[in-house]
Amino acid sequence: MMKNMSGVYEFLDATKIHNLKWFIPCPVLLYGKREYIMSTNHLDIGSFYMVFGFWSVLAGTSFSSLIRWSLFNPGAKFLDPVCYNAVVTMHALVMIFFFVMPVMIGGFGNWLVPLMLEVPDMQFPRVNAFSFWVLPASLYFMGISGFVENGVGAGWTIYPPLSTFSYHGMCMDLAILSLHLAGISSIFSSINFMVTIKNMRSVDGHLLSLFPWSIKVTSFLLLTTLPVLAGGLTMLLTDRHFNTSFFDPVGGGDPVLFQHLFWFFGHPEVYVLILPGFGMISHVLCFWSSKKTAYGNMGMFYAMLNIGFLGFIVWGHHMFVAGMDIDTRAYFSAATVIIAVPTGIKVFAWIATMMGSQVSTHAPMLWSTGFIILFTIGGLTGLILSSASIDVTLHDTYFVTGHFHYVLSMGAVFTILAGFTHWFPLFSRVMLHRQKMKSHFIAMFLGVNIAFLPHHFLGLAGMPRRVADYPDQFWFWNKVSTFGSHLSTASLLFFVFLVWEAFIAHRPVVSVRNSSSSPEWSVMVNLPKHAALESAKMLKDPAKKYLGTRL
Image (cartoon, rainbow, N blue to C red):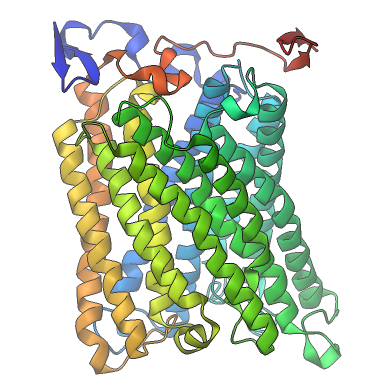
């Protein structure tokens, strides 16, 4: 029995096909646990990243709930200040390094890049597996750092002297080891993605989909900035244990040097978190607007390149209060404003992509439009902070917290949810419940706005961030923000239920319409475990045709 659900996907009645083995989405049931865990197939590794990010977001959201419970009333009665700072640090590190990056780059990248390139697998499948299996060890060390001594309370930026041995002992060493391992994972993964997209694509670059291009730009950013972070962390380790003085003024060092090293990585990291989302949003809008390509496809590509390049030269706007001279402040302010140009190009191109078509109200489209609106608001508050004189006033207030949560909690997370709801039929061969997913979007949309919009009001009123207590005058907006946080946490649990319900209800996908916008939808049959046991070397002949040969 077949029925049409609003013209995009077609389903079979699950009660008629419960005996069809190829609809089972779990590869463990198909070819054994050991073979699955030791798999080098990009589909399995992409699923590993997704599951890993799923557990990480539950942990990170739990930390954020603790933060908001602590700020529900003044007085620091729920968490003491030391524990509060440790929870804030863990929330940031887990969300950035163990949720957004693994899911966006590792999960969606491993699943979609080979399918969009129409190649059997990644260039280096074993390196791909190694990149993932380093991450659980990294998360383990990060987790136990929170239980050693009083936890890492230096913030995710771990500035010295707060991160020196005078303030943090073994817990900081474990956190630095965790970040080193996460960096190793990202570097190997970035090399793999760059080589795969360079060597194995079967079309010229200007014909390549936007998502593989976004992954390639992101991989370049990681490959060039992570060694700088690793160098800064290693210098910090030697300061802590080998009596060097890179960041110790007593020995002639400069703690501001660490800020430069960290933010030379940290600001491109912001675009690492959002550029793959830009590529996903472009694909989702094309599909649900019945367009073959995004409006101004090449303009979108060059905008991504410009964002990646400009991201390297604006790190100083995080350090306006660190003692910059007036000319340096003027440069970093101007460079920060210029980033709004390619970002604005992408926003207007997305809007133009939706024009002239009957825009659907399915969940992926709702997440995409919600992302465009809220990311634009976050970008506008970023323009406000680009002014050095304003930033000096608002630095380390809740206005900054509201800004980066609008571009991350409502930017990166909304793109992840848009991509997940869009490609979930491809990943699992079953469908999420359409109406319930709309309810989930409404709950999450309201929750994050109620949680983070008051942060701007609190920051303008002067409430500092990373402080466990506050005066009574800030009580009302903190209470409102806490209600919003609990609503978004409830919506996350509702989302977990919806994913579980999709596998239990078993609404399989029979065919996909409007699939001409991207080649990955042509693979709606049971995918092989591993199409090639070894990497393929791609050779280019004079006629610009690509031939695959086994190494």
